[in-house]
Figure 1 (cartoon, rainbow, N blue to C red):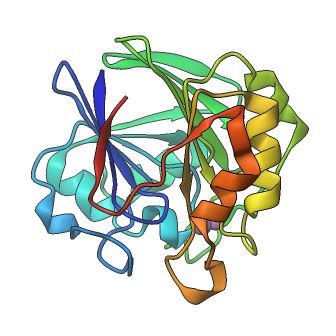
Figure 2: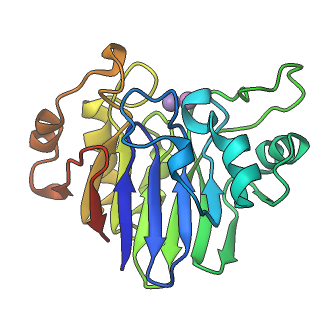
Length: 229
Ligand code: NI
Ligand code: MN
């Protein structure tokens, strides 16, 4: 088991039974939906970053520098973070997995765009990704990042216990496509994200739950809420 907490938008923290603290897509200080600020996080072991947009990594560099957490992302994004002073990094690429002390992380395809916030010279390009995380306890968690509905999600069928999917529309899948993603992936539990942060991505999570129907349990979380997975 692990404790999964939503901090609004795409930012989640995970605390494993073994005490490893992981933060996914750190956007807190400027995130209108966040329940905490970056300064509230005192200790951190790993930071997973799906892609370079500011709403997924605006707090990455200061957090990584202060806590010494290892940044896990695409090769280019990790190189960028290290160039900005985040000492510890582990670069990967889409389709590759690696065994970390807390479990295995595999980068999954995400169809989205790829600039890096803070890369003023445009020196780093990177493809957005999602994460398939198999915790040591056995729970398999998929954080899709920002993505369109893609056929590649069918490859995840049977490999996911908990799927965290964007439903906000405009920048990512909307509720209709996210419900189709549930059909593709067949997770036990679905958690919607990347909605209601600001007016452009306003969605009704109850309507998403209705669309999913009996295919999976939809857990609608509130920022600051934790669940055991
Ligand atoms: Ni994005
Ligand atoms: Mn985004």
